[in-house]
Length: 368
Image (cartoon, rainbow, N blue to C red; front, side, top):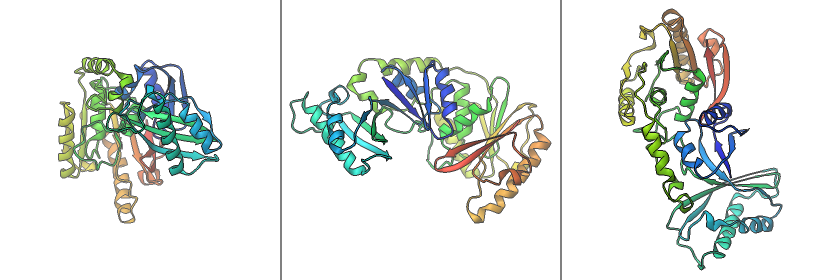
């Protein structure tokens, strides 16, 4: 079967190499996703282990539909009973149509749902379905009249690791993990410092990598209750992931000027169960390290609002001064949505990479 792992735009190559590290080699990379040819056993593996992916989908064979009759007939011809049990709750969660005859989202959802029920009636002796059982979320994409039907095996974004005590952090966990991957941080060789650590997302993602903690280990996914995934498939992968944790020593430090947000960071660090990540209240001007080599990875305020722009400009200039003076042999990886960052930082980046932090278009400024 075709398994599609979606990701934020700009992270396709990072996700590709992550999947290669997980043992997948025949990969199809496209805008916003990487696809593999796999089987049901790959579903729990990727959901539990992908730090970069957004969701994991099973993609059914595509078909042409130039009318609603075409759509109904093609969907009804699918053997939905192999995916949906008699009490299954099947929802059309998302429809995206581009350059196609069919474009009304509500009509596409309605016709697709009716066709699925018609298919189920061929197997189950029911005229109505309770839909009180396992949830099977579906996404439809129609491009040039070709319909792609994807079953969402995750049920929620993979960025939800389960350690955040509140969901107000400005940086998604998947993006934080991707930036750490791009920095090529090695816990055996490099210290890691985030001087704008906020609620600790970068620090925690680095700690989970260092100790080989599967990011989805403490989460539940909708496909765990699908009858087609019956047996010990999910539990075997969970048990294996639990056994692969390792007590690798690391040097991870964070600071922030806001003591209130650092309380949240400490709660989050405790929730994930990693010892040895240290955070303290400290302005950028006071950060230091006894280590000669390391990575500074941070997501400072962007100054998007007019009233915040001046303080962001001053902060960027101060960062450059402190980094050059006290961290001359370190590498810096700074994510910013401020297009004038390099001007205020007073230094052109060695390399710049376009990324998205949610809907915000950002750049990762890399200084080697």
